[in-house]
Image 1 (cartoon, helix red, strand yellow):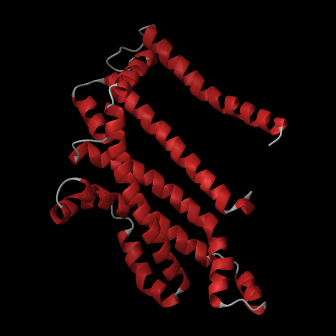
Image 2: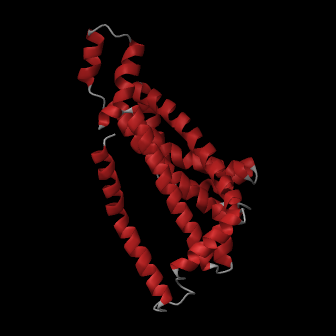
Image 3: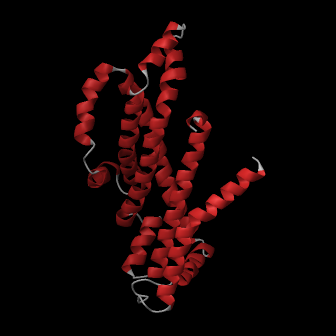
Length: 256
């Protein structure tokens, strides 16, 4: 990477940071000037103090690792299942005819509504939370995988077959690479849904995790802690999507 590219990236970073900096300055000013009462919006500096306190105490690490564990198990299980199942459906017309009505009927169903059922089946603790994450993340990944497979240019498939490629080579060299960009769209949606769901469910039934801390801060009206946790979730979401962008750039460099 040349110096001009580095400078361009640095410049882009600062330009993209301007809206966030402006919001933080406005936030701090509203708090310090007393325009908005602290019981509704504490000053940003006080939120940072609360974030520092919960970090150095080790509580943030403890609860955050619990959330990441649940999300990772549910999300990656959904990725493996949905991609394999989506490939099977996308490549088989009889399977599409059989499963498409079932998928269409169950996709709009709010997966959080299944929580009580999962608790009855799996008990309390991590299993029902992971099951909800799995169910919520599977659908966008599954649908994007099926769509990606079906949108691969049939001319490319015919060309590969005419050049002597066997069925396995067509799948690995043409179909799957052609579907990957759309599949990654599903992976992004699934990741976002997983983060939303794990925090929401933890607020209701977990005894640890970021969602549990959010519920606890809300119950005792600890707004500094509440806002600090929201900032942590936001930062984690950014890191999560940047990680997916990096994986996409490695797996499909031709997309650029």
